[in-house]
Image (cartoon, rainbow, N blue to C red):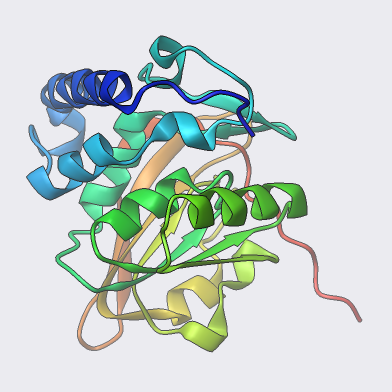
Length: 233
């Protein structure tokens, strides 16, 4: 974890500036996403979550709140804040939804979801990162996030069905059946699809009242791959 903590007033100023950048980027990418602004509740959540607290290596506030990914170790990254805001916005959350996050990483995306009032179940396949996420989330008081180390492609059946599923690693191939099955009717899933070295597209999936699942592309993206362990036997 970081061995220093900047004054919170200074961090807040950087978060506010970051939100302004996200607003501008939303307008710039509207021709892809179909939305030139994001829900104010999502932007307020970004403005409240201390991103610097989730980055293991000491960084300046300017670095911690730069609108691009940052390494968090083990070949993984904390996502670009604009992408965090977009993926969260696509879930169309209101309050108190149950959300499954696949690829918890350091816990930042989980914190943004919890800030919106969601009950979050986060799966991370790398145990050191799962431990880091638990520790940071607990220190910051995010009590409605539960993290486990497991194969994300299998979801978290014990807590299904979910009102929303957010996948922060890219699936090369069909969307895992378990994730579709664990999504509530009328629920939404946001997931990047494509090969490891691209091209990748962020997709928005929806399940209708009858349980039929469809998905459509939203935006070109770049994510680390979703790694699943094959079934034994």
